[in-house]
Length: 300
Image 1: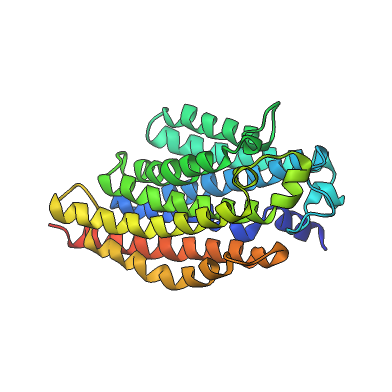
Image 2: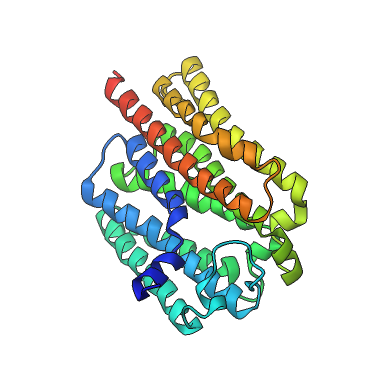
C-alpha cells in the first residue's frame, strides 16, 4: 500500500457520507446556497469525521482495543501501518482543517460558531480518548445524533441563511438517525472484540439480538419522521416539511438489502451492512435535499 493509500484507508472514506449528507440537506433547507459556505461547511464536517476516525484509530490502538482479531478493516496504529505519533498528528491536522473552515464561517456569520465548534472538537477527542471515553460508556450514539445530525444539518442551514428554518430542524432528525444507524452497524460487528477489550459500547450493553433490532428501528424511524413532518405541514402550514420531502421515501429501495442482511449476518458479513447504510444515508439525503429545494422554490 502506498503512503497516500495508507492515510486514505485510515480516513475510512466509505463512511464519509455521514458528514456529507447533513451539509447537503442543511443547505437545501436553508433555501439558499453560497458555494464557498457550502464548501467550508463540507470541510468542517469531513474534517471532524476524519479527525475522529484517526483519533479512534490512535486511542484504540495504543490501548490494545484494536487487535488482530478485529473483524473490520485493519487500523493504522494496531497493524503498524503508521506510528501512533503519526496517526495522532493526522487526527490533529484533520481537526485543524475543520477549525480553519469553521473560523471562516464564524467571521462571515457570528462568532458564536467558535465555541460551538470548540465543543464539537472536544467531543471528538473524548469519544475514544481521555480518562473515560464516552464511546465505552454507551453514549457514542447520542453524540453522533447530536453532532452529525442536529448540529451538522441545522448548523449548515444557519451558516447559509443565518437562521435555522423549521424544515432544517425536521430534516436534521432523520439524518441523525441514519448516522446513528451507521455507528450501530459498526459496533454490532465489533461486539465480540469490544467485549473482550472491556469497551462497553451501547451494542455490547444491549447484546447482539437487541442491537439488530435497534438498527432496524433507527432506519425505519428516519422514514417515518419524514412522513410525520409532511403530515404536520399539511395540518399547520409552516410547521413541518414540504410534501416534496416525500421524495426521500424512494430511498427505501437502498434500505432493503442492509435491513435484511442485519437479521442474520455475522462477522465480516456485517461490513456490507455498514457500507449499505452509508449509501442509504447519502441517497436519502440527496432525495430529501431535492425535495426541500423544490418545495422552497414552489412555495408562495
